[in-house]
Image (cartoon, rainbow, N blue to C red; front, side):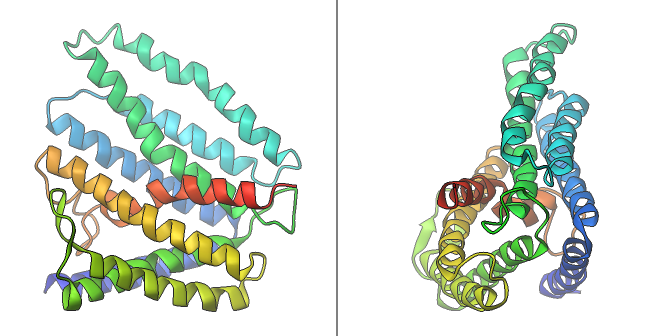
Length: 280
């Protein structure tokens, strides 16, 4: 079976499951993105272990899970905005326990171990937790709540950007985007992805009206730019430790980090935009 066929089959099955979980209710959405968080952090820390680093894998994942669960649990709270600020304070003691635990590991690279453990939390768990807050960022409701269509719209735009970039890059790509990091990425691919994503954003705005067309266009621009940079960031990490794919659990797509890299860098910017644009 060719890689393209595997990619197509995995995309259809995985995409269908994601859409169903997001559309079903907030609990299936939260469970799905919690699973993605855990698997992504596991892959990330496993990379590091294979390259003579010693992250505190289980403690890092535990903290990541707690951050995600706490934000997901309170997405419907009437104190929504206050809780966004309170939860980081509640998590701080656990984060600093990473430093304390390193005392007892007798490692020769404590700086690296602590830094890599915290990097996994900031790079992966926090952006996934922000996806929960994005799902509650409807300008028509000040008290939070779960709005599946916002996440579905986000997802469709990411897919449109990826698909458009792939086909434009394969058929038209000539000018390298960032050859030192990713030799196959081209400007033509980025432009093709942006064009396709903007068309999808326009269609989405006709049905998902909690956000205006301008909102969807700005979100699309953020996703295209930040998602492309997120892909390059992951490529930079992989190149530095000499691996091609983050994993092999998703045939044709690699690992979870390969599939969801656009979310990790884009979600903080999308969340910030939604908060600033609709601040009362």
